[in-house]
Amino acid sequence: MELHKSIFLLFTVMISSDTVEVKKNLAGTEGGSITLPDPVKELGFLSLGGKTLAMVIERRFQMLEEDYKDKVLWDNNTGLFTITGLQRDDSGIYIVDSKKVFTTAYKLTVYESVPAPAVNVSAESCTLLCSMEKAGELLTLSWYKDEEIVIQNSSALSLPLTVHKQDFSSSYRCVAANPAEQKTVTVDVKTSCGEDNNKDNDSNPKRQYMVTYIIPIVCAVIIICVAVIIKQKFFNKKKTTTTQDSVNSEQEVQYTEINRAGYRPSQGGHLPDSSGPVDRSNLTTVYDKLEAHRMVDSDTADHVYDRTYPHT
Image 1 (cartoon, rainbow, N blue to C red):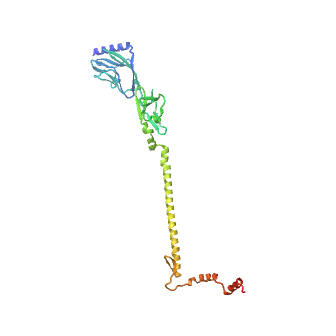
Image 2: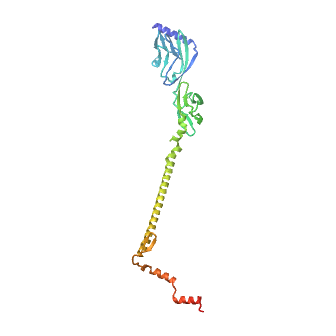
Image 3: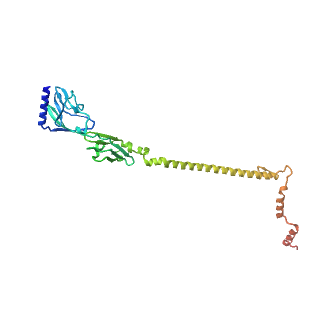
């Protein structure tokens, strides 16, 4: 035990007297974990800001700071230290010292977790808008076309991108990232902005207005017009039938009157019936009128004759 204390004191003196250059900058996310890349397998220790957190002696791990008891882990197979449950105040310079091999310093910065971005698509102009609810430290928004960055902004909460029709076959993704983490949203432009989508996209206000109001009104007008036309044709047909029936009725009436006068129809016309006596009582008036025009009394006729042909 006294040997362990002596070794520990020796380590502390050596660390406090030496200035270790930072080998690498590391970035972590709140709530996450990070593993320091240099191993200590037999003899060494881990310190933060001049304070020794844990040590390894004869391949056995020992925690020295109670505040880090469940926070610092050591893998006896790989010899690597892992810091878990990261918080913003865990940022600092960590030193991994393997007495037989190396002494390395790492600068760890813990960042807020990256919020997931959201993408809204305007199908009419095919404008993609990537946005976040809040900004974070060193947080950037980027639009990628395939594997190439086409636009990037490190201070805005939203980032628009307009895609032209000739580029619909490319893949697009919005990336929100800080030095420790990134989150990605991929957009299928061909589906979101393609012609088929414009035909079937019910979320389009103009299309929704057409479907809800214009199309039903047009259909109703067409149905009414067809009904009126059918009704008019039926009325004209009925009127024609009624007129024809009326004509036939009149003809039947005429035939009836003639028959009552003593005639009967035949194929050659209307001839008097010669098989029996004929009642001419109904024709007396007509006959008298005809005779009044055709016949002249004898005195008038003689007078006209004398004037025309005088006696010699």
